[in-house]
Length: 516
Ligand SMILES: Nc1ncnc2c1ncn2[C@@H]1O[C@H](COP(=O)(O)OP(=O)(O)O)[C@@H](O)[C@H]1O
Ligand SMILES: [Mg+2]
Image 1 (tube, rainbow, N blue to C red):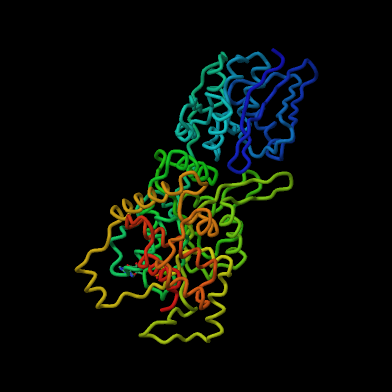
Image 2 (cartoon, rainbow, N blue to C red):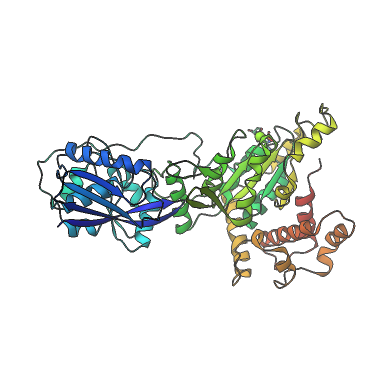
């Protein structure tokens, strides 16, 4: 069998495409040629594959081997094609079964010692294989558990090229290879699915807790402004806990993004929404993603279906804040490369927290603010108008007073579990109302639709205060629409059939409450 073929997967962003790997053996002088637009890493594959085959105990024939990766126009990055190239060559040489090799999608990098090394992005690659109609994948042993998270696929985890060759019917001297373990990249900031604390820990601060519930129920972005120590960070970190579980597809997408980021799920698929809190020293690339070989998702993409929290938001360079405008607009981030555009989903809930001024004391009754007024204005102006405008809920969070603490001690706050139930019910109500539209949450409804074709303007008396605020210039038209959306969310949280005067009033407060 002089020509043999198998398949692998090329990833561009989260999207995987099947790559056909064809090997041809001819009776000319020994050579090993790989064609099909390989990048530098693929060029190196030639040397890696040859050495690995020798050291695994199943050497390639000393004749002319030509390997073609197609479609040629598809950008192919990384070293995950090694295994497919090696088995295609062994099949072309007649050492292993061509039929067996052809049916399996092969993913994995070879080490010079003949062992298979785990690669990042196994989950999206296996998903792509399954969606293209393949039902069996062969992956490095350390990636096997991750690959098995994809439903409906048979996973062959192998430690070495020899194991792969033996699986495909090769007969070689038997040797035992210790599998290469997954790299230990435990990330102390990796808080996916782990509860950080209960909502009931928040004493008092009822408005802020209400704002958090509304944000979770309606999918609204939030801006929390207040002095240091008011509990802004504490509040934001409790938002993922009150969001509903992800559905199976969302959970797979979240896990796929983490797999590409080199932080694959360790213990099964988590249904909990992710929480990403990049530090204010993060670069624009850290926010959207990048990298030269495998393009890795940044914080905005990793926060998909969860929460992106920017603490001390004015400390972020404005260029970094501005890259968030594209994902907020479209729900995706695009990363441009010379010959391709990688795109990642980036549909997250944004929470910004900020002190009111550099010293943090502006608005405090007890301590005087030492910032010059101009410095204070400049500080918050770093959060640009277009970004601020997307934050439906904007709230001043005061420091809790001793008296407030005493009151709070007698009335325990709402727990995360109870809040989540309320959020789930409110979301279900909104989803029922929005059935037949492209939107699922109140935050997604376009304002003109809401007031127009949607017929969701509560009308009459309910919006009297809001209408007056619009007339007096206290809110803009955009702000008006956002307040209407939050009113619907507050009504959903209470099980009301439509927002009343009280809901609109609370929504107005949750939007315009930026003053101490
Ligand atoms: N309302 C509150 N209830 C309980 N603890 C609070 C409250 N506000 C602040 N704290 C405590 O103060 C600490 C600092 O709060 P933090 O969230 O970091 O404030 P901020 O981010 O506004 O500066 C928290 O760890 C928490 O223990
Ligand atoms: Mg803080």
